[in-house]
Length: 275
Image (cartoon, rainbow, N blue to C red; front, side, top):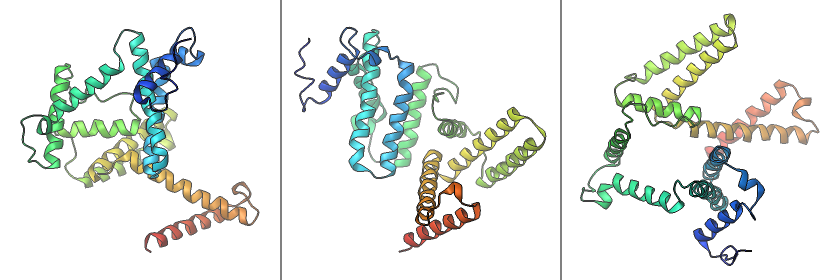
């Protein structure tokens, strides 16, 4: 058995984690599940862990954040280990690539460029540098480089942001609201006269314009929807608790009863916000 001194060192830091990953992937003595994994099979877990980090931040669960960041870090280590086994790159190369990128994108910190600029100007400079990087990769289209694997709502937001940079955008938020009305009408018509595929297409069009409205309003759509999900969960839990106090469950109740309890939860939250 290989020396496991580092593996069992509670202060081993990142080298310890890398050694654990190597042990898990060892074809002779490692974990059968870990050995079988591929980039494609692990990718969904990577996405899930990133969202769990975002969830901990959203809930301000700072005691959980360390663990969630560790889970996400482990995903990077996992991918890097598989890449090293395939002769592609290793974790050090990943870190060096990111370091090089950050230095190149912050000439006002690591170079001779002046730091005397606003955050908005820095954002514009950042985007210009990223555009130059895409050009070096022969990604000359305005939408090139927007990852296909992003969550659909986030990708819609990014696609529209890219298109807006080259002038393909409604000049006013009112125009977007008008387009939402149009798309909602088309969806209603599709529901009455068309089949499931056409209904799905019209629904997608409406969602896409909603993402554009978020951009015009300066709202991050993924964050907004997460907050809406959290609010729904919180208020529905209130309904379940209130019904439980009288010996009932949601499935034993009428919609009117649950609506009244929902309104009570909403009023209670507003009262708390005003205190």
